[in-house]
Structure formats: C-alpha cells, structure tokens
Image 1: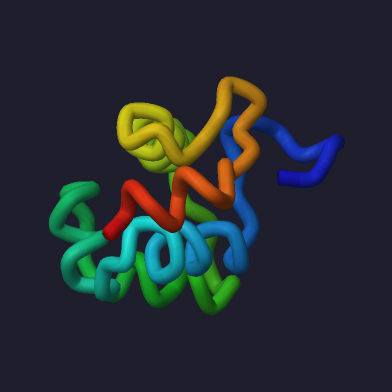
Image 2 (image 1 turned 180 degrees about the horizontal axis):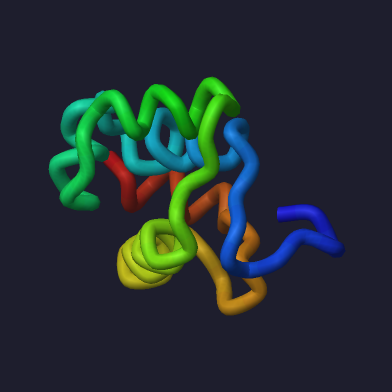
Length: 85
C-alpha cells in the first residue's frame, strides 16, 4: 500500500496480487470468499470499478488473520509465500 492511500481503498494491482500471489485463489474463489460475483472481482482488478470499503476491510482482515499482512496493511512477503500454500 502506498503511504498516502486510505486504508479503505486498494489499487487494482493490490487486489490482483493479494488474490493470485498471496492467497493463490482464482477470481471465482476469491469472489465466493468475499460474497461477491466474479464479475465484481474482474472489474476491481481491471480498474473499471473500485471495491467497496467494506470489501477492502474484509480483504485486509482475512490477510491479517492468515498472517500475511501487518497492521500497517503491508504484505509480509515471506509469510505470504509460506502460509498461502
């Protein structure tokens, strides 16, 4: 996350990286976990729509629970690689 970005927003790249690299999920799996459509995930990752604040908070909460994100919303690379497998 960039230094100036709100904790309630994520860039398309962040969402895609978290889904694919960190959580190793398909768009459909990620969407199901969040209770949204795969189409919504495609829109977020493509930058045509922004994820709702509540969804961003859910993504961050899931990442913290899995131990792959710190309280400052930074991905913990080593932990992400090991725990997401």
